[in-house]
Length: 50
Image (cartoon, rainbow, N blue to C red; front, side, top):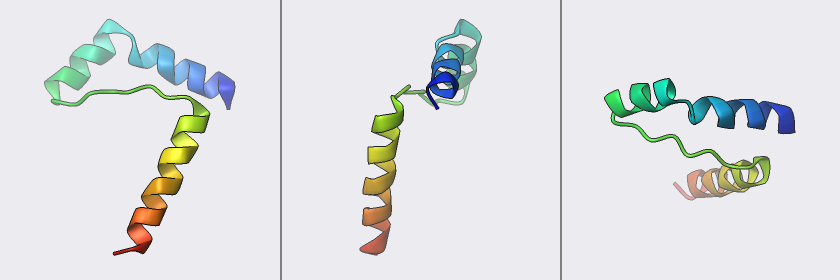
């Protein structure tokens, strides 16, 4: 998981990736695997309340 996260983080920091995201009016926010897990849990909890 760490190796995959490192690869994605590296790709998201590339100027060409930043340019493509900017053209889409999007912003990439690299996170750690732990942060992603926490975000996923919060999202699922939020969906259950709907």
